[in-house]
Amino acid sequence: MPDVHTPPRPTPRLESIDLLRGLVMVVMALDHVRDNLMPLGDPVDLATTDPALFFTRIVTHYCAPTFYFLAGIAAYYASRRRTLPELSRFLVSRGLWLVFLELVVVRFGWYFAWNTTFFEGLTIWALGWSMVSLGVLIRIPRWAMVTVGAAMVLGHNALDGIKAESFGPLAFLWTVLHVPGTIHIGPSTLAIAYPLIPWIGVMALGYAFGRGGVQRALKIGPALIAAFLVLRFSNLYGDPHPWTHQKSAVFTVMSFLNCWKYPPSLMYLLMTLGPSITIIGLVEWWRKDGTRELPEFTRPVVLFGRVPMFYYLLHIYLAHLVGVAVALYRFGDARWLFVMATESGNQWLPSNSPLWMVYAGWMFVVVALYPACKWFAGVKARNPGQVWLSYL
Image (cartoon, rainbow, N blue to C red; front, side, top):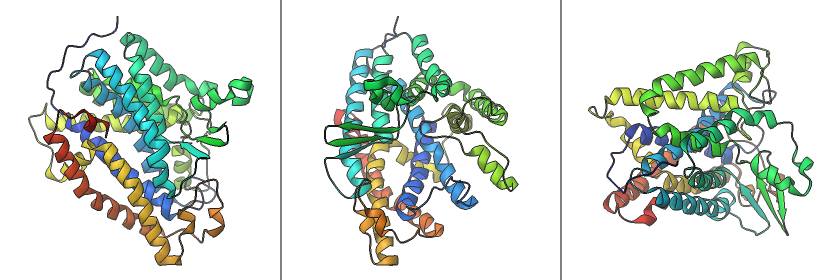
């Protein structure tokens, strides 16, 4: 039978979750500033990249899996304040709200342009639909939810050879679920970069982890890291792009770490979630069951972790504005930053900005976001009963 949750009772915040979420939000801003300042080339293409650019991109790989996993954990802790039907309704409604934000608010932040013929299914799209799915999955027995989540995470790479076209008129479903691509809806196009499998599974396993997993994080996290090292070294299964020996030891390590993200392979998830879960365990070990406070210097990061969607929406716009400012300063032109992805903005692209500008822009974005996030965290703390605040 599904778990039956008692009515609301107060629960303390798990600061390791806020700290880790805040950390990945800060790192995520680095990637999105780089997107705006270095629009040319692929930073993980070993034929054209360099180690500094490669690792600038690779470190941000930890963001999406950790964010989805922590969303599942947060949903579990919310289950201790809501009945099961209440939590299910909340997850479904918040998930649909996130899909709307992706297609409207986030999309404009990426392009500073608008039309009704091109939409994208990116991180928040998949996060929203994963939340809707979790709202359904929590109503089935826990063992069944874990089985579904584990099957998605462990088994989806076995389906890599199946093409969307093989489903005929239902090809769009495979694009939504597993293979990135485009769907045509009347005169409009929906480009899906984040298929829902295995992201739904990651969130479901995060929910299951919330029940007792934190106490075993220092066992689970290192076990996932070890599994990654063994499986990745073997090249037997878990990633559509095996690693290979390269021209130098550094580039060989880069090949080893260059796991597939769209959709995230098993290797990608083991590589990212293993260290993230280990960090949760280390922080909780440091805190000694809440009897020791986190160091003062971590407080800004914890604060970011308490207002994740508010931070996300603001940082998309601010990172884009930084890109515009740098382009106007360097080239006197920023037209490519005001067009949709399907338009001809690439004809104006001059060159990438140097990497040091990316890091300078990143630090500016993070520092500039702090006052607004501190204000909004205060609003949430002063109004705990305002349901609408839980949607940001």
